[in-house]
View 1 (tube, helix red, strand yellow):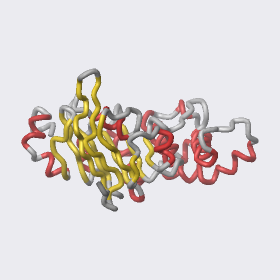
View 2: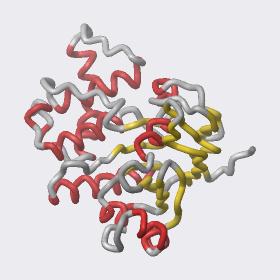
View 3: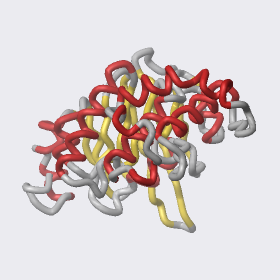
View 4: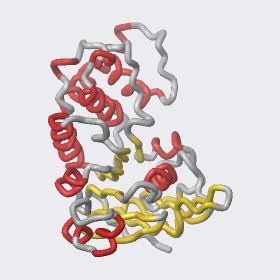
Length: 254
């Protein structure tokens, strides 16, 4: 089946079975280029499994995944990342006892030199990445922390660093797995604003439990329940869907 030009990621009948249990069953997903698309649902809906299938950390039992017009169903995560489909918080290279600058510089080195980090290279060679690294650090609001070790960063700032290292890989599509999980209100607002800014020139697909963040950021929302698509549309559409309200066990949660 041909894929429309404005669709960057498409799944057809995406299914994952575990020993007779269907965690994801026949999911058809269409993500438009240049949008923020959220994947939500109650606990046990299949969000994590679906996300792991899309990012190639799991292989589907059946179905097809097409990215930028190319069938990636059988590809490995590293190969998919090289095509520009990058998962933050999983692929990003964050080393706790290195500085923020060193972390981003290493991610840039990975982009230029492949999977090898070449720690043995001279400081002058590695310093070639400084300007771009500092620019990325500034983009995620970490300029004041550039020389701090990653382990010293507050939780929300660590997430910002992980996004910076992911952006260093120059993704066309950024996949975020619960980017605001475990954060306080101030950090949630900061990361939500960061996502909005980095999405200006790329596509974002995120799994997110915080529905206020989903409402604020998302162009399109796909609601899963029991491994299947229950509803799709903008926030007003899905939040007023009676079946979505029932799935979340109450109007307040939907």
